[in-house]
Image 1 (cartoon, rainbow, N blue to C red):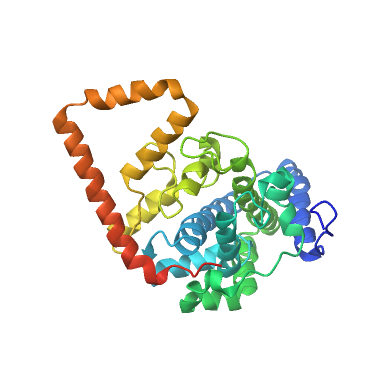
Image 2: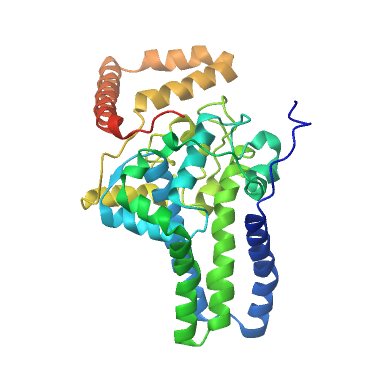
Length: 340
Protein backbone atom coordinates (compact mmCIF):
# COMPACT_ATOMS: atom_id res chain seq x y z
CA UNK A 1 0.00 0.00 0.00
CA UNK A 2 1.48 3.35 -1.04
CA UNK A 3 1.51 6.51 1.04
CA UNK A 4 -1.06 8.05 -1.33
CA UNK A 5 -3.54 5.18 -0.89
CA UNK A 6 -2.91 4.55 2.81
CA UNK A 7 -5.90 5.56 4.96
CA UNK A 8 -5.48 8.64 7.10
CA UNK A 9 -5.33 8.04 10.85
CA UNK A 10 -8.44 8.91 12.88
CA UNK A 11 -9.07 12.58 13.60
CA UNK A 12 -8.30 13.78 17.12
CA UNK A 13 -11.40 15.90 17.57
CA UNK A 14 -10.36 17.28 20.95
CA UNK A 15 -7.13 18.72 19.54
CA UNK A 16 -8.83 20.00 16.39
CA UNK A 17 -11.63 21.80 18.25
CA UNK A 18 -9.30 23.22 20.89
CA UNK A 19 -6.65 24.55 18.49
CA UNK A 20 -9.07 25.98 15.94
CA UNK A 21 -11.46 27.22 18.62
CA UNK A 22 -8.85 29.18 20.57
CA UNK A 23 -7.45 30.58 17.31
CA UNK A 24 -10.90 31.78 16.19
CA UNK A 25 -11.70 33.32 19.59
CA UNK A 26 -8.35 35.13 19.65
CA UNK A 27 -8.71 36.45 16.10
CA UNK A 28 -12.25 37.74 16.66
CA UNK A 29 -12.36 38.46 20.37
CA UNK A 30 -9.10 40.36 20.82
CA UNK A 31 -9.76 43.18 18.29
CA UNK A 32 -13.36 43.49 19.53
CA UNK A 33 -12.24 43.80 23.14
CA UNK A 34 -9.46 46.30 22.38
CA UNK A 35 -11.83 48.52 20.38
CA UNK A 36 -14.59 48.36 23.00
CA UNK A 37 -12.61 48.47 26.25
CA UNK A 38 -8.97 49.21 25.40
CA UNK A 39 -5.99 47.46 26.93
CA UNK A 40 -5.70 47.60 30.70
CA UNK A 41 -2.60 46.78 32.72
CA UNK A 42 -4.02 43.55 34.27
CA UNK A 43 -4.56 41.78 30.95
CA UNK A 44 -1.32 43.17 29.50
CA UNK A 45 0.80 42.08 32.48
CA UNK A 46 -0.91 38.69 32.65
CA UNK A 47 -0.24 38.08 28.96
CA UNK A 48 3.41 39.16 29.11
CA UNK A 49 4.31 37.29 32.31
CA UNK A 50 2.66 34.05 31.23
CA UNK A 51 4.08 34.31 27.69
CA UNK A 52 7.60 34.76 29.11
CA UNK A 53 7.34 32.07 31.79
CA UNK A 54 5.70 29.55 29.47
CA UNK A 55 8.05 30.39 26.59
CA UNK A 56 11.29 29.85 28.51
CA UNK A 57 9.82 26.74 30.13
CA UNK A 58 9.22 25.18 26.71
CA UNK A 59 12.55 26.23 25.19
CA UNK A 60 14.96 25.93 28.13
CA UNK A 61 12.92 23.22 29.87
CA UNK A 62 10.84 20.95 27.64
CA UNK A 63 13.27 21.25 24.74
CA UNK A 64 16.85 21.69 25.91
CA UNK A 65 16.67 20.19 29.41
CA UNK A 66 14.26 17.27 29.04
CA UNK A 67 14.14 16.36 25.34
CA UNK A 68 17.88 16.76 24.64
CA UNK A 69 19.40 16.71 28.14
CA UNK A 70 21.90 19.39 27.15
CA UNK A 71 22.40 20.24 30.84
CA UNK A 72 21.30 19.20 34.32
CA UNK A 73 19.14 21.37 36.56
CA UNK A 74 18.27 21.50 40.25
CA UNK A 75 14.78 20.37 41.27
CA UNK A 76 13.33 23.92 41.77
CA UNK A 77 14.28 24.74 38.16
CA UNK A 78 12.83 21.48 36.85
CA UNK A 79 9.64 22.07 38.83
CA UNK A 80 9.27 25.60 37.44
CA UNK A 81 9.75 24.37 33.87
CA UNK A 82 7.31 21.49 34.34
CA UNK A 83 4.58 23.68 35.84
CA UNK A 84 4.78 26.58 33.39
CA UNK A 85 5.67 24.27 30.48
CA UNK A 86 2.36 22.52 31.10
CA UNK A 87 0.77 25.96 30.73
CA UNK A 88 1.70 25.90 27.05
CA UNK A 89 -0.95 23.19 26.67
CA UNK A 90 1.31 21.34 24.24
CA UNK A 91 1.13 18.00 26.11
CA UNK A 92 3.10 16.59 29.04
CA UNK A 93 6.86 16.71 28.85
CA UNK A 94 6.97 12.93 28.34
CA UNK A 95 4.80 13.08 25.21
CA UNK A 96 6.39 16.31 23.97
CA UNK A 97 9.93 14.97 24.35
CA UNK A 98 9.00 11.62 22.78
CA UNK A 99 7.62 13.31 19.66
CA UNK A 100 10.63 15.60 19.47
CA UNK A 101 13.19 12.82 19.83
CA UNK A 102 11.47 10.87 17.06
CA UNK A 103 11.52 14.05 14.95
CA UNK A 104 15.29 14.31 15.33
CA UNK A 105 15.88 10.62 14.73
CA UNK A 106 13.77 10.58 11.54
CA UNK A 107 13.77 14.21 10.37
CA UNK A 108 12.18 14.63 6.92
CA UNK A 109 11.25 10.93 6.87
CA UNK A 110 7.87 9.22 7.11
CA UNK A 111 8.20 8.59 10.86
CA UNK A 112 8.88 12.28 11.53
CA UNK A 113 5.69 13.42 13.36
CA UNK A 114 5.86 16.92 11.84
CA UNK A 115 7.47 15.98 8.57
CA UNK A 116 7.93 19.13 6.46
CA UNK A 117 7.90 17.11 3.23
CA UNK A 118 4.14 16.72 3.78
CA UNK A 119 3.68 20.48 3.50
CA UNK A 120 3.62 23.61 5.63
CA UNK A 121 0.26 23.06 7.28
CA UNK A 122 0.97 19.45 8.20
CA UNK A 123 4.25 20.40 9.88
CA UNK A 124 2.72 23.51 11.46
CA UNK A 125 -0.33 21.99 13.13
CA UNK A 126 -2.04 19.47 10.85
CA UNK A 127 -0.21 16.52 12.40
CA UNK A 128 -1.80 17.35 15.78
CA UNK A 129 -5.30 16.92 14.31
CA UNK A 130 -4.80 13.18 13.84
CA UNK A 131 -4.11 10.29 16.17
CA UNK A 132 -0.42 9.50 15.94
CA UNK A 133 1.30 6.16 16.35
CA UNK A 134 2.26 5.14 19.86
CA UNK A 135 5.89 5.93 20.60
CA UNK A 136 7.91 3.22 22.39
CA UNK A 137 8.37 3.88 26.09
CA UNK A 138 12.10 3.34 25.61
CA UNK A 139 12.35 6.69 23.83
CA UNK A 140 11.73 8.56 27.11
CA UNK A 141 12.59 5.88 29.67
CA UNK A 142 15.31 8.10 31.11
CA UNK A 143 12.80 10.86 31.83
CA UNK A 144 10.51 8.53 33.78
CA UNK A 145 13.29 8.19 36.38
CA UNK A 146 12.55 11.76 37.49
CA UNK A 147 9.68 11.79 40.05
CA UNK A 148 8.79 15.37 39.08
CA UNK A 149 8.35 14.32 35.45
CA UNK A 150 6.12 11.42 36.53
CA UNK A 151 4.10 13.82 38.68
CA UNK A 152 3.60 16.22 35.78
CA UNK A 153 2.59 13.40 33.44
CA UNK A 154 -0.04 12.23 35.94
CA UNK A 155 -1.56 15.66 36.57
CA UNK A 156 -0.67 17.43 33.31
CA UNK A 157 -4.20 18.57 32.41
CA UNK A 158 -4.87 19.96 35.89
CA UNK A 159 -1.50 21.74 36.05
CA UNK A 160 -1.79 23.08 32.51
CA UNK A 161 -5.22 24.64 32.98
CA UNK A 162 -4.32 25.92 36.46
CA UNK A 163 -1.58 27.97 34.80
CA UNK A 164 -3.21 28.84 31.47
CA UNK A 165 -6.72 29.51 32.78
CA UNK A 166 -6.44 29.71 36.56
CA UNK A 167 -3.92 32.54 36.77
CA UNK A 168 -5.75 34.87 34.30
CA UNK A 169 -9.03 34.03 36.03
CA UNK A 170 -7.62 34.95 39.44
CA UNK A 171 -6.05 38.19 38.17
CA UNK A 172 -9.27 39.13 36.38
CA UNK A 173 -11.41 38.56 39.47
CA UNK A 174 -9.02 40.52 41.69
CA UNK A 175 -8.72 43.52 39.34
CA UNK A 176 -12.18 43.62 37.79
CA UNK A 177 -10.78 42.91 34.30
CA UNK A 178 -12.17 39.39 34.07
CA UNK A 179 -13.14 39.39 30.39
CA UNK A 180 -9.88 41.03 29.28
CA UNK A 181 -7.72 38.64 31.29
CA UNK A 182 -9.61 35.64 29.90
CA UNK A 183 -9.44 36.86 26.30
CA UNK A 184 -5.93 38.29 26.24
CA UNK A 185 -4.15 36.77 29.22
CA UNK A 186 -5.57 33.30 28.57
CA UNK A 187 -6.83 32.63 25.04
CA UNK A 188 -4.57 34.99 23.07
CA UNK A 189 -1.54 33.93 25.13
CA UNK A 190 -2.26 30.25 24.43
CA UNK A 191 -2.53 30.93 20.70
CA UNK A 192 0.69 32.98 20.60
CA UNK A 193 2.58 30.32 22.58
CA UNK A 194 1.25 27.56 20.35
CA UNK A 195 2.20 29.17 17.08
CA UNK A 196 5.58 30.26 18.37
CA UNK A 197 6.35 26.55 18.75
CA UNK A 198 4.52 25.53 15.57
CA UNK A 199 6.49 27.96 13.40
CA UNK A 200 9.73 26.25 14.47
CA UNK A 201 8.34 22.99 13.09
CA UNK A 202 7.13 24.58 9.86
CA UNK A 203 8.83 27.84 8.81
CA UNK A 204 12.21 26.90 10.29
CA UNK A 205 12.22 23.88 7.98
CA UNK A 206 11.33 26.03 4.95
CA UNK A 207 12.69 29.58 5.23
CA UNK A 208 16.19 30.67 6.24
CA UNK A 209 19.82 29.69 5.84
CA UNK A 210 21.59 26.34 6.17
CA UNK A 211 25.14 27.30 7.17
CA UNK A 212 26.01 24.06 8.97
CA UNK A 213 24.34 21.23 7.06
CA UNK A 214 22.17 20.55 4.02
CA UNK A 215 21.55 16.96 5.08
CA UNK A 216 18.27 18.03 6.70
CA UNK A 217 15.65 20.70 6.03
CA UNK A 218 16.18 22.71 9.24
CA UNK A 219 17.13 26.36 8.69
CA UNK A 220 18.42 29.28 10.74
CA UNK A 221 16.09 32.26 11.06
CA UNK A 222 17.00 35.29 13.16
CA UNK A 223 13.38 36.48 13.00
CA UNK A 224 12.07 33.23 14.48
CA UNK A 225 14.81 33.35 17.11
CA UNK A 226 13.27 36.59 18.39
CA UNK A 227 9.73 35.20 18.30
CA UNK A 228 10.58 31.84 19.87
CA UNK A 229 13.10 32.60 22.63
CA UNK A 230 16.17 31.68 20.57
CA UNK A 231 14.85 28.54 18.90
CA UNK A 232 15.13 30.02 15.40
CA UNK A 233 18.73 28.88 14.86
CA UNK A 234 17.36 25.53 13.80
CA UNK A 235 20.00 24.43 11.31
CA UNK A 236 22.60 24.63 14.04
CA UNK A 237 20.31 22.83 16.47
CA UNK A 238 19.68 19.90 14.14
CA UNK A 239 23.40 19.70 13.38
CA UNK A 240 24.40 19.79 17.08
CA UNK A 241 21.29 18.87 19.09
CA UNK A 242 23.30 18.10 22.25
CA UNK A 243 24.43 21.75 22.57
CA UNK A 244 22.55 23.81 25.19
CA UNK A 245 22.85 26.80 22.84
CA UNK A 246 20.92 27.39 19.65
CA UNK A 247 22.35 30.82 18.93
CA UNK A 248 25.97 29.76 19.13
CA UNK A 249 27.45 33.17 18.30
CA UNK A 250 27.68 35.75 21.06
CA UNK A 251 25.54 38.28 19.22
CA UNK A 252 22.74 35.85 18.31
CA UNK A 253 19.47 36.31 20.19
CA UNK A 254 18.98 33.28 22.44
CA UNK A 255 17.31 34.06 25.80
CA UNK A 256 17.10 30.36 26.69
CA UNK A 257 20.90 30.09 26.34
CA UNK A 258 21.42 33.13 28.54
CA UNK A 259 19.00 31.78 31.15
CA UNK A 260 20.70 28.37 31.29
CA UNK A 261 24.14 29.99 31.56
CA UNK A 262 22.88 32.28 34.34
CA UNK A 263 21.39 29.34 36.23
CA UNK A 264 24.74 27.57 36.06
CA UNK A 265 26.40 30.66 37.50
CA UNK A 266 24.30 30.46 40.68
CA UNK A 267 24.57 26.69 41.02
CA UNK A 268 21.10 25.79 39.75
CA UNK A 269 22.35 24.16 36.53
CA UNK A 270 25.43 22.11 35.67
CA UNK A 271 27.04 19.96 33.00
CA UNK A 272 26.24 22.43 30.22
CA UNK A 273 27.08 20.64 27.00
CA UNK A 274 28.59 22.47 24.02
CA UNK A 275 29.66 21.37 20.58
CA UNK A 276 33.46 21.61 20.29
CA UNK A 277 34.49 24.60 18.19
CA UNK A 278 36.59 22.28 16.04
CA UNK A 279 33.48 20.25 15.13
CA UNK A 280 31.45 23.38 14.33
CA UNK A 281 34.27 24.83 12.22
CA UNK A 282 34.62 21.51 10.40
CA UNK A 283 30.92 21.54 9.45
CA UNK A 284 31.11 25.14 8.24
CA UNK A 285 34.20 24.55 6.09
CA UNK A 286 32.94 21.21 4.75
CA UNK A 287 29.66 22.75 3.64
CA UNK A 288 31.43 25.72 2.05
CA UNK A 289 33.68 23.38 0.12
CA UNK A 290 30.72 21.37 -1.17
CA UNK A 291 28.76 24.48 -2.14
CA UNK A 292 31.65 26.63 -3.44
CA UNK A 293 34.42 24.45 -4.87
CA UNK A 294 36.29 27.51 -6.15
CA UNK A 295 36.74 28.80 -2.63
CA UNK A 296 38.61 25.70 -1.41
CA UNK A 297 42.00 27.05 -2.48
CA UNK A 298 41.29 30.41 -0.87
CA UNK A 299 40.30 28.76 2.44
CA UNK A 300 43.42 26.61 2.40
CA UNK A 301 45.58 29.67 1.66
CA UNK A 302 43.99 31.58 4.54
CA UNK A 303 44.75 28.71 6.91
CA UNK A 304 48.33 28.43 5.67
CA UNK A 305 48.91 32.17 6.02
CA UNK A 306 48.12 32.12 9.73
CA UNK A 307 51.18 32.51 11.99
CA UNK A 308 52.54 29.23 13.32
CA UNK A 309 51.81 30.24 16.92
CA UNK A 310 48.19 31.03 16.04
CA UNK A 311 47.65 27.67 14.36
CA UNK A 312 49.18 25.84 17.31
CA UNK A 313 47.01 27.81 19.74
CA UNK A 314 43.82 27.13 17.80
CA UNK A 315 44.66 23.43 17.59
CA UNK A 316 45.37 23.23 21.32
CA UNK A 317 42.13 25.04 22.16
CA UNK A 318 40.10 22.76 19.89
CA UNK A 319 41.65 19.65 21.46
CA UNK A 320 41.05 21.00 24.94
CA UNK A 321 37.37 21.66 24.16
CA UNK A 322 36.98 18.25 22.51
CA UNK A 323 38.44 16.59 25.62
CA UNK A 324 36.08 18.55 27.85
CA UNK A 325 33.10 17.56 25.72
CA UNK A 326 34.23 13.92 25.79
CA UNK A 327 34.34 14.00 29.61
CA UNK A 328 30.89 15.61 29.81
CA UNK A 329 29.51 13.04 27.38
CA UNK A 330 30.83 10.21 29.55
CA UNK A 331 29.07 11.71 32.56
CA UNK A 332 25.83 11.92 30.56
CA UNK A 333 26.01 8.39 29.10
CA UNK A 334 23.97 6.73 31.82
CA UNK A 335 21.25 9.32 31.48
CA UNK A 336 20.83 9.17 27.68
CA UNK A 337 17.66 7.44 26.35
CA UNK A 338 17.72 3.98 24.86
CA UNK A 339 17.37 4.17 21.05
CA UNK A 340 13.89 3.54 19.78
